[in-house]
Length: 414
Image 1 (cartoon, helix red, strand yellow):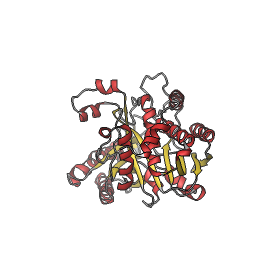
Image 2: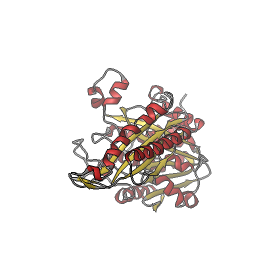
Image 3: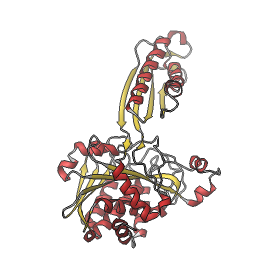
Image 4: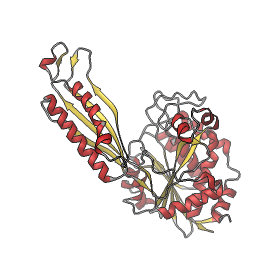
């Protein structure tokens, strides 16, 4: 038996303006904007929400957009899309490739904004079918982990009302047409760490008169790879990535310092703290062994918490997605090592939420990918943050339906 939410969602999205939404998606993709600089994207989204009948505010938490549509007594449901792009040079070859040099929507946030626009418009047009309040937000700075917390700190809930439930989704690699859900942990925590190694600079011809921070940094990079492989149990999932190393200005100058930037992924606070303790210990030890004149500077930067779905909320949303798209399209993928700042909107887990994925790899790309099994092909197709990441525009309609059906499952029936 099909639920009222599923039937209504199919009715409200039966005649989506797909061509218009595809044009919007291509426009957003051509004009990527970095975190907290999403001015054009925000203005575009705000204009669409106003046209749909939402009370709209801009500049929330920097460049955030909020749309509010009150429609009688009922729950308040928040739908969220992130808006920022990445400092990645696009290599997709698409006719609508980025026109901003060195910037790209390499994580699908342009698709997220398009989905949100379509869902908000459909729900507003079908407001005679539901009761409650819709909050839709275009969130800035997900990639830097600043956006969700920034909007909350700027009075998001005091100004526009506290939601009863949060819903969010993310484009992901995988054959288009799947909607992975997890009833608990679905994404990991992320922590950024910066290390400054202080040496003693000098001429490249006289290394004996210096303390070379480049050599020490090289040892550090190698030794840091043992934190996960040798200090955590095999069953503890974690990743430590050295994403950047910088030092020096000329071939024949030994610099005075080297800088290393790390990203950690962990699925428990206990593991995260053990990794941070190991990083501090290893940095101090290598600098001591090298005779550095000063201790290393270890700074903990942006941190995104684990994303843990409320089991009951996610079960409800997963069920309606199964009704709309078929039960074989919904499955539990287990927790991913990727991370999100979406949980910051839950304000210390005080608001239940459901967060899921929408697979977006074009069929021809998936079919051509090497490998015979799902994991082999999954590893081979372009993933988020790749310069080749190019979601299938055919997922625009389904991505709108996932949000519409999820919202209707949480709102009251008219």
